[in-house]
Length: 427
View 1 (cartoon, rainbow, N blue to C red):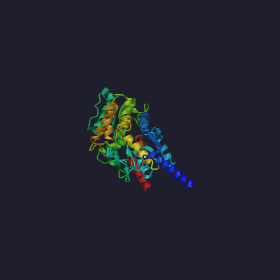
View 2 (view 1 turned 90 degrees about the horizontal axis):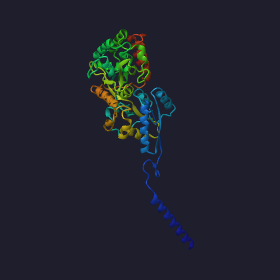
View 3 (view 1 turned 90 degrees about the vertical axis):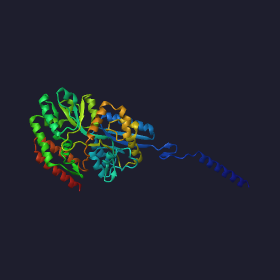
View 4 (view 1 turned 135 degrees about the horizontal axis):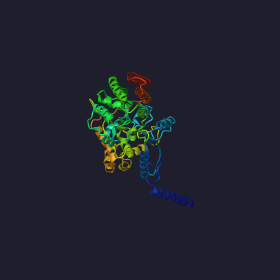
């Protein structure tokens, strides 16, 4: 009888403890362990200028304050060395969770299945730009900003030397005549522009404007020989007549470098650049700049494109958190107010509206270029996968023309062979 009474007391005590525990227990929110959210570590890698680094780090601080369980390790540098480092990390299977990606490399990383397919709501992002990150049936990249390729020029020097500024709808004939007129008005050693025939992007604009299509079609080179020969001939004559900067100056030109950028130094009056670079130019040449779209001919020559992209490592263990962070960067208005136009005009219309009152005059000038190009923009075509070596070798071939080491026709044949060899190696 005493044993039975003891057993009853023990069962009652156990039941009391169990009920108390049930009463104190709380439901865990998704992603939480007990009362504390699960800690998440993300590595994020990008390239850019110091102003981009500073703005991005400040945005990361804000995100971490809003998400105390997330710790972000930032890895950043300039463009030089970025791709070598990323290639080394990816080969070692140590690629960061989130990487800033350029269109020149996007196809290669996608083809190697190193980029995660995005899911979730992407409706706030410009759909036309979103499509450019959709490869082989998968969304592998999100555009980081809107961008355009156009002309920036030293408005102050145009006024000083009595030159007519570019107008909306100007043509290549207008440009070539302006270059001739400028030679008569500018002092020795100062030119209207660098030698545009040294740059692939300027030739792309010219071929587009002549109605011969984009430089790449269906992941293959589309370089029109007649257009190329005409283009090369014009610039060859300009070099002989001293109308454009000499080959040595053109090749040594480094964009936004205070020592080697010919526009910043005042030895040329205009150059091609992206709208996302206008604010950086203004910081070096305050209140001196004007902008224009590329000249037209039978058709417009310029295009709109993403500045670059955000992609996620397909091997990440934090896919959901990585996607949440990138979408926050692109869609959050407070993040937008920090980043402004550091990666181009925001891809979210709501963010653009939120930051517009805070834009500097330089930011607005970059936006003006984008809008000027957008009036008659051509479709954007990316460099095909596997074409990075081709791009480098093609540019070396083009440079051999301006140094008179080969002819324009021989260079065309070399470029065609380079493209054929590239395509053969990909099959």
